[in-house]
Image (cartoon, rainbow, N blue to C red):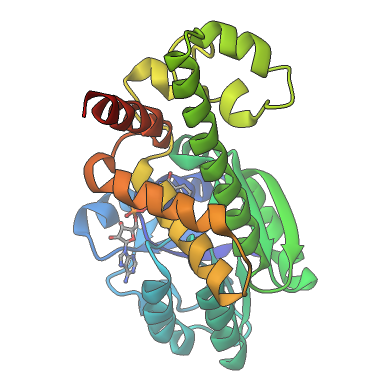
Length: 299
Ligand code: NAD
């Protein structure tokens, strides 16, 4: 049974994920270049490693939770030679599909096994152990990883071959970004036309314009009390992260010759919004659309 885990990247997501593995009885060796992150992991019951390579030595599964694909490839260059042959590498970072495929190919050619397993659910899901994992790679490797992922997640889906977990993640978030912008434009247009937010919600939430963005995450205060709009747009899902994911989606649209005009536009809209509001929830885009409309009307 898989018991020995290496965990690299102990940030907002990785720290609580690693802590949940320790709590479930796994032997976790953890590394992050930030000393405070290593200290926190040790306090949570993991063994802090002094180098990335040390966190991959003698492990059955090595999990990475890192900011971007370039870093994943850099770290893999240190980890792959240090790991025992046949180690299962599971990258949970959100990265380019092309980087995910490259990372898996390098792991396999070094004699290991590899999965991409990006997540949704944010820090709250990482802490509660209720993340959704979208997994790409061989079925046998998925079966090996499954009990480990089940500890950190509430839903674990094998989406297909290497890179297809990342594909599921960026397709979903591209659709969410487009849908939040569309909803926000409709809400601001409604405001200009004298339609109250509650009336908008009462009609659209059961009409053909219905969406998760409206019924679970309404970007204006009132109709959905738990949405970040009611909490001054504290994330939630920060604009910086939505912008990152839309950039990955736009890259994939281009790389795969898909005529995704709205996906590319949504990436540009959120990149501009992230310049000033990176730390606010992504649903605050409605405030930007409103402010720009008011400027235009005034000018
Ligand atoms: P974060 O910046 O808080 O954590 C990343 C960690 O990686 C940092 O602690 C950093 O020091 C560490 N790191 C950097 N270089 C390293 C190295 N060489 N070896 C080991 N560790 C190294 O980011 P996060 O919010 O935890 O996100 C991690 C990943 O999860 C990202 O790809 C992000 O897109 C994705 N994600 C985040 C969320 C979220 O809500 N935060 C949700 C879903 C997916």
